[in-house]
Length: 124
Image (cartoon, rainbow, N blue to C red; front, side, top):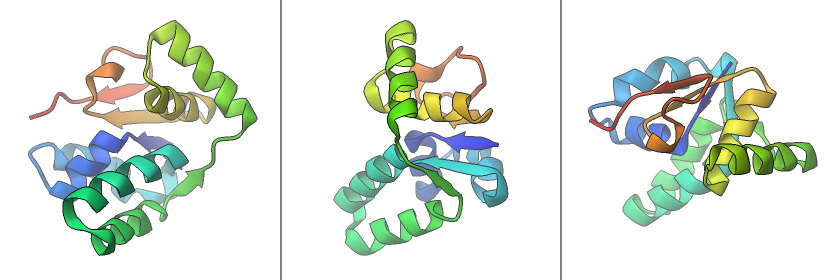
């Protein structure tokens, strides 16, 4: 299973220098978990940069994976990861979603660098 961080989604949608690194996880929708927080972050970023139509198209693609809502158990796990690993709130939710579901995180966000179960690619 794979969890793609918001930064990686935005890289892929922008077709930037790292986009091909994230394509295997994004395009394998059968094994793709999408934390609900990534829908929020990606929709907001694309809405700001390209408008509502493109933002809706982006989240429609993301919804091809299995969207994982933030429930009480995941919220507590995220808080624990946030404290112990010093992760920002959204990143802690993304990481908790991956760890709880036995998935790997794909990202270019330096906050994840060196963490267990993470495919980290520095921004190109």
